[in-house]
Length: 184
Picture: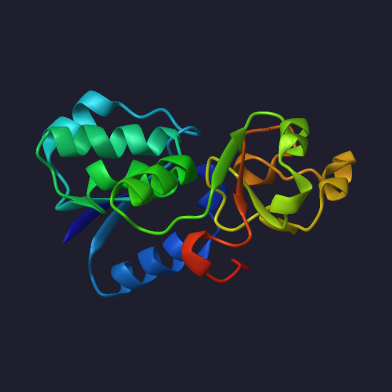
């Protein structure tokens, strides 16, 4: 089987995909690795040739790899996971909206570009789970028990890839609707 892994810079040393690629190669599969955002990729040839049996993505939300996966799917190539579903599960704000729209009990979700905006949330609604809005594989996720914890740069939740200068944030109430347990 010929596979094309799209691996963004942030994940080039992570177990998924590094160990998965190694295992697939040891089983005799041919695995090409493209690094969107760090290498020049001639998209018209890569996507149109259909040289791969499947395309696999390891990306941050909104990263350049997602566009390549969507291009492969548009050209009729097999993608793992379904390219149409990736954005809905990677973008936390979108995922909360989709879940709520389908009747799933979801915690109240806030979106903010600057951390200071989170101070507008009433103290009675704490604790909050504060995360980068653009996905970070669990990096920079923290429990904030009071508005006072939002002060100081060292406490600032990081954005994409742990970059403290990337301010897009999402906060969810610690206790969800209909008596759900606090998220940890």
